[in-house]
Length: 228
Ligand SMILES: N[C@@H](CCC(=O)N[C@@H](CS)C(=O)NCC(=O)O)C(=O)O
Image (cartoon, rainbow, N blue to C red):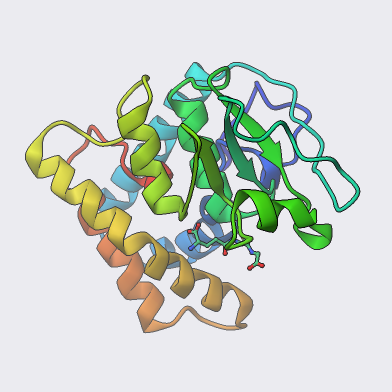
């Protein structure tokens, strides 16, 4: 399955904020192998439909922006705690990418400035002055810095305008929360299997079944791309 990205002609897929890396790196190859083995054609169609709908919605909302260069050990820090909201990311970090997706999905390109960090040659000020955990993503907002991508997704959703990431309907909210809580285990299992040669493990089979089960409850998603 290849989804078109007319707004990203110059961006490699792995740096594409609307192409969550788990979808790109993990889900697609595994998914196709997994789905081929599955007999339930209806589920297969429904899942692909959900991915396509979500990607199309994201692309429709997108405004092209100039991406900043990654800051390395030689770079000066930005004017920290000056009231600017900053999302510190690394372009290739999947955890950072999901917060970047959320920011873009909500149309917050003007409100939340991206600061890209070169993790291989990190500026010392990042740990010393911004985020003592020294990981990405982190969000500088209202003179505080917060981390943990899944927490940041909720924080961004609750503290900024734009389309809600979490459905209003209580039942659907439950499913979204379930997917959120589950997505790191899902990613872990997928990544492990991607690196391994041979068939996918039962753990991954179960992981995909769980995702499909959540997705197949409703046909008006999308919950998955931002959650994973
Ligand atoms: N649980 C964290 C994980 C973040 C994370 O591990 N980020 C990696 C990059 S993909 C990182 O910053 N690693 C730097 C390090 O561990 O020193 C989250 O979800 O935000």
